[in-house]
Amino acid sequence: MKDILNHLFQGGTLSEDEAYALMGRISEKAFPDAQVAALLTVFRMRSITAGELLGLRRALVERAVPIDLSAYAPIDIVGTGGDGKNTFNISTCSAFVVAGAGYRVAKHGNYGATSVSGASTVLEQHGVRFTNDAGRLERSIEASGVAYLHAPLFHPALAAVGPVRRALGVATAFNLLGPLVNPCKPACQMLGVARLDQMRLYVQALTRLGLGFTVVNGLDGYDEVSLTGAFKMVSNHYECIFSPQDLGLTAVSPEQLAGGATPADAAAIFDAVLEQRATTAQRDCVTASAAVAISTICPEKTMDECLAEARESLASGRAMQAFRRFVEINAA
Image 1 (cartoon, rainbow, N blue to C red):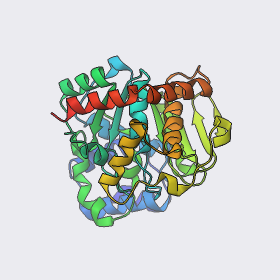
Image 2 (image 1 turned 30 degrees about the horizontal axis):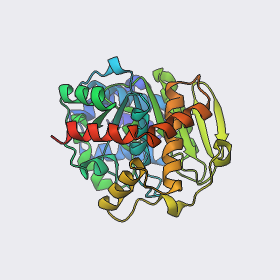
Image 3 (image 1 turned 180 degrees about the vertical axis):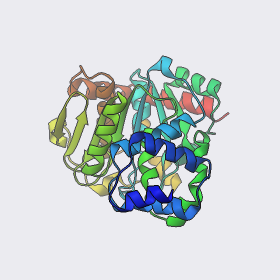
Image 4 (image 1 turned 60 degrees about the vertical axis):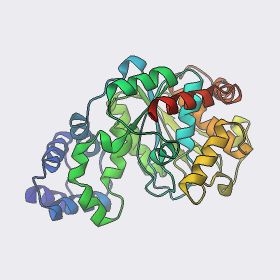
């Protein structure tokens, strides 16, 4: 590790294979915490490269609890978090709208880092019990269209760096890894990022992984299709900037997307969206997010067609039905 640190301190970078080997040793607790902290500090002081990120990723995915959902060709819908906006659970709600439209979702998530309610938080509010049991996950995606993979149950290797991350108390390279280490290796991914430099990094990484993808960035700092302003989309098919008006929608204010002060508040908003009691701003934001996910799965469809499918999923009650079936299976 000393040689690696000296190389990095002098401005060097690691190849993908070097980063892979290093992560393997870290997961075996081969290095003192102080050296691991120094490594993470390097990646905090300068941007991690796509090769370094992919090497770390490969080591974690290889050590993850295996789960094969490839028969369902699912999409993962996830944000990096860390935008500090404390929005309600837009991407999680969108997952059930996408499922209600007839597609399959394998969502990889965790508790919130900078918001009141992460994906795991809002699902736990509904009595969901997380599992890495393959049989239950297959039943869930078969019956409801959604399987939820709670990250800590699938990545024991991350336990080795947990104390260091907590002691540092700042975002590290491992925050960037979360969206890339879904253990079921989904067929495609919609990924929200808070910054344009993160967009470039993930586009490089996802391209090299060969996934169908769309990376979205709210140009005012959201890791969502927030409709608070223009947002940029980059996929392996196109690159564009949309305003809410381009989608036939009205711009919303940050206050209209607030997730509340408690997990119970966030769960109430989540329910209101799926039960069609939400505000227009909340509903439109989820609809737009789901439409982008559908366009990721079906790039041949226009955005208007994808929006129509998302609206129908909500209006018909199929999104709510998907969520109820999901809870029935996963709260047992």
